[in-house]
Image (tube, rainbow, N blue to C red; front, side):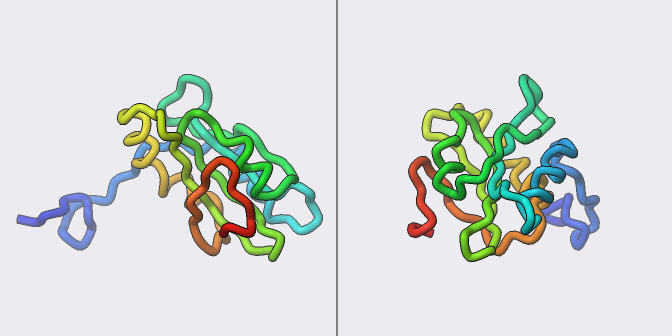
Length: 134
């Protein structure tokens, strides 16, 4: 009997995580990736009381420092253009987050970060992070 039924190699069927990344996330990420735009970061999280819809919560032009200062008190995902021109993504869960919210957000992480195409790597985001620390 296969150990991982959802793995196509074991005969199971690959299943979606169930996250619905709204088009605004991809649209804002396109702005971040565009050299002629000043937007260089975005934060996405759950839309209102939805447990599956992820939308853009904030974006701006202050680099990783501004992005780190705007982190939510809830799980969030995002991406940043570094001053070197490279792109990084992140998944942030605050310390006081409930285990249920933490688990749901973790389950959706890959589905959301896959929308942020062109990232070199994932970083460990935290409040007060500076580009020099990366």
